[in-house]
Image (cartoon, rainbow, N blue to C red; front, side, top):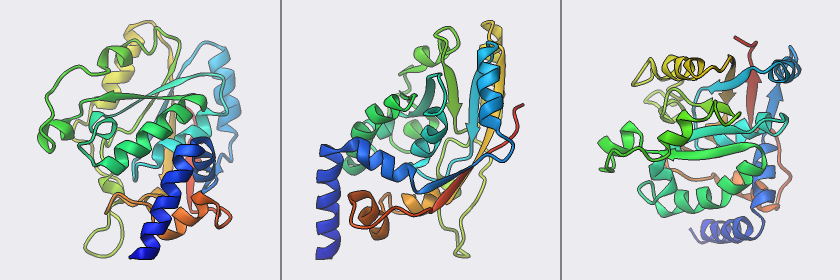
Length: 239
C-alpha cells in the first residue's frame, strides 16, 4: 500500500545517501556469539601465516553483512564469491541496486564481493557460463587474502516451507565445492584454517520469499526505530 511505498522511497534515499549507515544498522540486527573466543584464536592463527576460510550456512542476502561483522574485526581482507545475477539485474532491479550500494561498504569492512556465474544463474536465469571473477578467486591465497563462502550456494534454507517454518540447511548441489576450494588453496602453498559459522534469523532481516525487507526492518534501517537483535551469528571452533 501507500505506507509501504513511502517506506521504500525513504529507504532508497537513505541507502543512496548513507550506505555506511544502512550497513551498520543492518549489522546491529545480529548478535555475534563467540563463547570460546574464536576471533582471538583466529587472529593468532593469521599471525602465524594461516589462511582463514569462513564457511557459513545461507538464509538470506543479508548474510554478507552478517559475515562482515566478523571480517571487520580482523586485519585480513576476504574474498566472497556471489552469484553474478545479484550484481546484474537478473534477480531484479531492487537487489541489483542494493548490492551496488552495499558492496563497496562491505569492502570497507574487509569483505570483498566477487561475482561469479553460479549454477543457478545458468539453469534458472539463462546467463552464459563464463569465468567471471573465477580467476580472482583462484588467486585468493596468492594475494594474501582470506576466503568466505556459502557452500549451499542458495538462500533456499531461509525460505518458508509448507509447515510455516523455514527449510533449514540445504544439501549443496555440488557437495565437494568446499573441499575442492580448500584443496586448491593448499596446493598453492597456503595453510588453510576453517571457521564454521552458523547464521540464524537473517531471513527475518531480508526475506528470501519475496526478496524484500519487512516493514519493521525498513523502519530500523531508515532510523525511525532503534535497531534490535533479530538474528545471530555464531562462531565454531577452528578446524
